[in-house]
Image 1 (cartoon, helix red, strand yellow):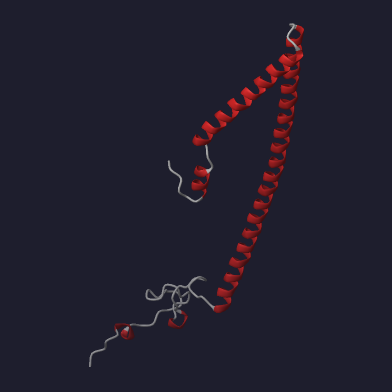
Image 2 (cartoon, rainbow, N blue to C red):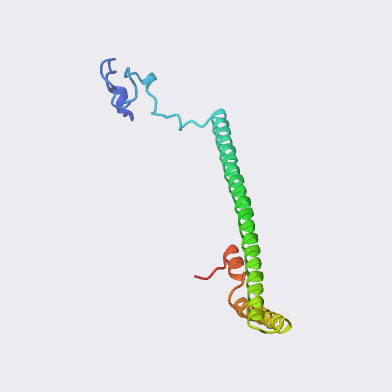
Length: 161
């Protein structure tokens, strides 16, 4: 009968000589020989639960941070909207007062030139009507070129380049 295991016929290793078949053994004994394992090779239930809890806590912190960023951005949008509306209102009021002052100056200038006050009022009124008609025509022609459709298409991912 021939031995199939050639290691059985060899002399045992001493404590000073490392076993070449067991490099992880410090003593060279077969009982101390084990495969090299790291912490990540053994996945125990407790370790898995611990890792899952840590991942869950990180996701909660990440979600809280994203919530804080969104809240700050929302507050910034509210403030900028208020500033924009106030600026638009101030510009509108200034424009109205300027237009009224221009009309008064024009009417008084026509009266000083000797034009009857009813005729000068009619001229100022017709001038205002013609400016309103011109503004409406410009707005109507501009509306064809400007719309909110590209904004909505961009929001829904259908924007063209």
